[in-house]
Amino acid sequence: MNYVYLKRLYAKRAELEAKLELHDARYCFGEEEVDDGTDSDLRQRLSEISEEIATLESRPG
Image (cartoon, rainbow, N blue to C red; front, side, top):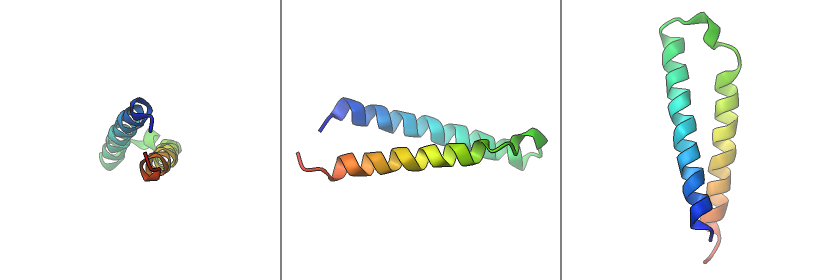
């Protein structure tokens, strides 16, 4: 298993989660320009990275 790559995926996922939390907070406080599709893009990328992490973690070795 490539642990360096996996570590990078974890870091990227954490970064995307933080961006999504910030985006959600801005939306909650009524910032109108937030509804531009950014949240769906972030959620899609998070899903892709999480799937890749799960695949790598499920491989033996």
